[in-house]
Amino acid sequence: MKATAVTRAYRRRAPGEPRAIGYVYILPALIVYAAFLLYPFGQSVWLSFVHWDGLTVATPAGFDNYRALFSDASLRAPFLHALLLLVFYAALPVAIGLLLAALMSRVRIRGMTFFRTVLFLPQVLALIVVGVAWRSILAPDGLLNDALRAVGLGGLARPWLGDYTWALPAVGIVGTWVGTGLCMVLFLAGAQRIPRELYEAARMDGAGPLREFLTVTLPGLRPQIAVALTLTIVAGLRNFDLIYITTSGGPGNATSVPAYEVYHRAFETNQVGSAAAVGVALTVLIFVLTVTVSRLVEGRRS
Amino acid sequence: MTTRLERTVTYGILALFTVIALTPVIGILSTAFGSQNSLDTGFSLPKGGLHWNNFADAWSRGHFGTYLGTRSWSPRSWWPPPPCWPSSPRTPSG
Image (tube, one colour):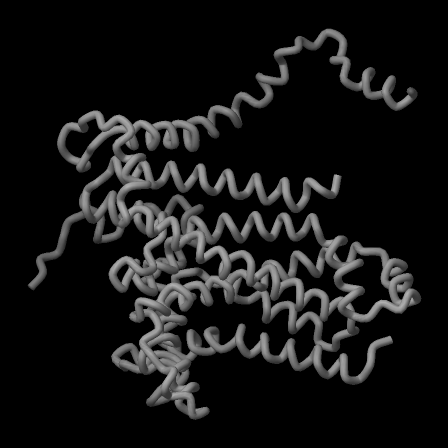
């Protein structure tokens, strides 16, 4: 009763202050937001409904560009690749990050700062640099093939980025390498907030390391898992630089992803309308996936 | 309390992931110190010693000084314009 009364009083506007004053306060930010985000996005939506080569006059296309997303195999493939890459860009980093965070929070580690810094290092490198480094590792005469030959597994050596079957997982592994550190740091921060008493109670009840992880650590890290999944899914779906540097969508279009397809269509094949439709569809996909993941992972908490 | 085996496994896994995290970074460093004419990329000691001048070249070619704002706040930094500006007199080349 008392809390409700306080909330009601808090919600009541200050005396003498018009109700619309709030909108005036947010107006400067809203203008910047509209000019640099809403207007360009609106223009992209408009472009997605026309046929335009970037030079001549645009002609209306109706929903043709969107229909092509479903009927054209060369447009469907990038979206399928992006969804497959989410295993490497989101699921694996979160799983490995959880494993590392669980290990590091359970045992008192000497050199904790060193391990944390080194494991986070890939996250701070520019993706262009990461792409160049991994391209040399995955090259036919690169470190990975040399290592395989050195341990007698030369039969497995192949041009990883030029192989139709292995190019996509190879690019995905690079994404896992980049994203794991971020997830681990998020989970370590979250693990520090889990009360020690819960672990002690679990141990008194005879819980082993696995049970302790499943019943204490995992539920305690649910908000951090939601954040990590959101960040990694967004990073995975809008991935462009790594693909551009390592494979340029090849071989064929085996590693083409929506963001790369937008660039390819807009600037290389002059299909600006189609590129805009891919971009809008990608935005909608990112929005739907991130909202769904947030609802699924974090929603249950409340 | 954690057992000795548990600690060993933990350090083993951390060491493995540390190697995986550091290997490409070492490759980048190795390439950065190599000769610019060399075809070798990463994971080999640079032939002919460490080429420290790569970093000086990177600093000037990448316009790090300009982008880091070391000169941009000074009014004198904008004038006279650099020779590459269209308005400035060009020196005949070739």
